[in-house]
Image (spheres, rainbow, N blue to C red):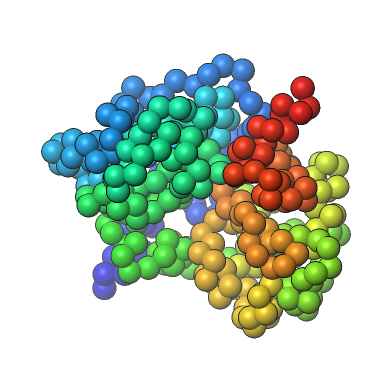
Length: 342
């Protein structure tokens, strides 16, 4: 009964908002220019500035009747952050729901101000963003009333997905299940088996024995997609249609899986499973998601939010050049590359 009510509540929002889980009412939600902005972003005026101690920020939020706090990690010229402001945070329902339950505290991932986290450890804004692996901006960390980080979103998501994530945390479903399992009830998997995936020449054919690819000198990119997926179609017709992207993906073992199918798979670590079960175990909740593994089968990074050309190409370049071996995180690697190119 409890789970059925959760599913109905998600569906009620999706349909009342006029947005379906597999498509968007406007391509601009998931299709936009992700080059660096010319002008710096201005935070919405209802964002909070930290008192320098997240424990004190939490106390202030609780005094105001909130369930906790959300830390926002962004960049001043981030196109994805701008899109988040223009879509999800411009939606009156989403904004009111968020403000009713949380104080949102903004940080710049390159900031140098000192911040004390809820566990008493001190960081700069930059160090805190690395600690929470905010590889893709905007990233959000949700803290409960006890100051425990309970959920993270890395990157930009369409409004319907962000609203569902808010509800997932507010109603404390994170205590009993993953977000992917929670969201699946509102978007039954059988539906997504309808329709085919976009075929590309660079995808390897079955059988999908990823363990056999270990040690062949190439990283592996696993594309988790689904049928009737507008965002998946845009990925292939947009970022993955460009020559620079294809050049990078052809340096990898590229695998495409329907995340709802029972296709047999052997994971890079040698476990026999199915595409559906593997996606669940990885907590894949956005299609398309791309998970990158090194040649030894260890996960390097994943892109499980909206990604346009510059972000996707940057991640593939990071993987192929093994930037993860030489930098603290992806953002530091990209900054180094920009400085070298000047």
